[in-house]
Image (cartoon, rainbow, N blue to C red; front, side):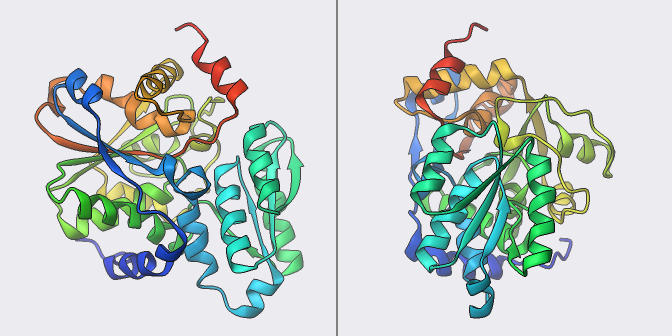
Length: 322
């Protein structure tokens, strides 16, 4: 097994640190999906996590590593929404000033949540503009910049999701997770492959923004054409220097890509199971329709990453025809 700087012990220690501030979210057997795909499907419901997504884990872990002087200076982050909300929650819990840089088209429910947690907000044309500005401001002010994925503390926190899955379903065969910048996926890979290398890990990206799927196929960072996606938390440019890529490239068993229509269909299926899930959170469910007989008879845990979407946007998406 390749030696990466983040270890299983780091992930275990991260879980111990953040436990007082988060939920051990349910791993719920889903009868509807299990019958539909002729296998045993469990949903790791991070949509029921504090702040409505898994992102609070990474922000809490990072802030808990900061020295007191760093906390006093504050933290800054670009975000399409969920990363910023997780940071704002962690910052409020730990009494750290937080400034979140957002694209102008951020979901209104996410903006309201950020305001509720007391974060300072600034808006930019695109998420990439927000990222560039946040990096610049962090350098100028001495505030700590917090990437949504390219940080060992965030990756270790992503692995805590896997620890909870193993605790609740020790004989899981396959874990499917959503893939954006790779913080969650790389953490899950490190944890699961360290505990039991036989457990398969699949990740799911939008077809409109397949950066890591392309990099993984080609074995290197390369230029990828990006289109907008309703799954904004999984789309957009990725730092070519990110430490998540070598981890994912080494450990991942498969990266699937899903269409916008498949994501919408998955959101509708989740609604039938009484769950409102944002597009990014539905990607793992969306991939099941591609898997066929390969997944029959397996115990599968799918990470449902978030629920933060305004009702008006949710209705406009699931109301669209395929």
